[in-house]
Length: 274
Image 1 (cartoon, rainbow, N blue to C red):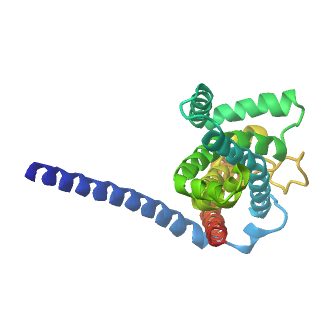
Image 2 (cartoon, rainbow, N blue to C red):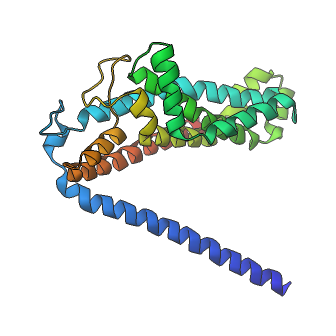
Image 3 (cartoon, rainbow, N blue to C red):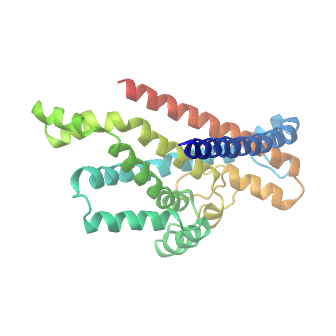
């Protein structure tokens, strides 16, 4: 008994130690970016049109929002309905469920550059979409789809079967039970997956370089090329002449991700209350 308590204390201490190290590393990265980036934020970086002199990031901000919205519209409904099908309609332990789960796990482990090559060969060349926002969004939707499916599936599993049984006892059908009882109860978990997907979309660069392109101007439509904030930062740092502006872009990118996550969490909280 005493040995078990000692082991528990050691494991607890190691958990806190590694958690503290992770927070310390995160704090150092954020501090380094803010210290080097905030002093170089200027109004020229937010000019409506990019030029070689101002290297404005505003067009990239709009392009990022554009790609995030399109990708979520394509991936989130499909991912949520797939998760619902796996949990609510298939038999436990069936071969189909095992196959879909294995496929999603394999998709989740594929490097982003491979997705970029696939998007370039299939969407850009074979389908004739060209290097555009649409090609980038289609590629990213495949990338984040496994994440949405898995988080939706796990969120639905956390809903007690008593909720389903109570709804059936009151005369509700399966579809009504799912959309009125199960999904609202699982909404925080589902939105957690959506927030993670947004973070991956915003931070992605390798796949988008090959599909969405690196044009620094604002994309005029789905079939136009345009760079996101992450590609803009990569381009500035790669050139070697705008390192300070790259740090400033990193500051805006961090704030951008924080705002999107906060808004998503707020929406999830309100939907949960309803």
